[in-house]
Length: 141
Image (cartoon, rainbow, N blue to C red; front, top):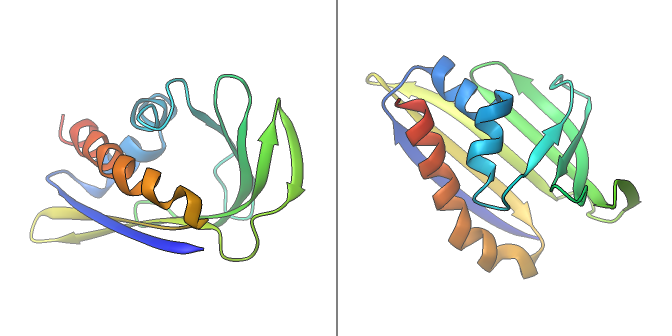
């Protein structure tokens, strides 16, 4: 696993940034940079399962490790989904995605940290900044 850490400053409230990240339509909007039509299925509660899916019901599944509204959302990725069916838990202990919001001097710093298999690192290094830009755009409307 390799770690990717990114951040952006956003001129909005924590509540607006949180909604930009996790409100259903906003989530679909910013995750479209990864794949058009991407969506998530979850009750968004700490400890709950989450499924990150494409229109063909392919993607990955995991759990929400930590969720503090307007501050933190941490996911532990467990394995892949193919045609809507969960495959074996293949990602190991380190596969994760974390979002942290910190307020300082009237702006929010959104930090995103991802531990991903090395073969995905180049892809995420190129595409994740576009996702953060989209989140910033939604938040600052």
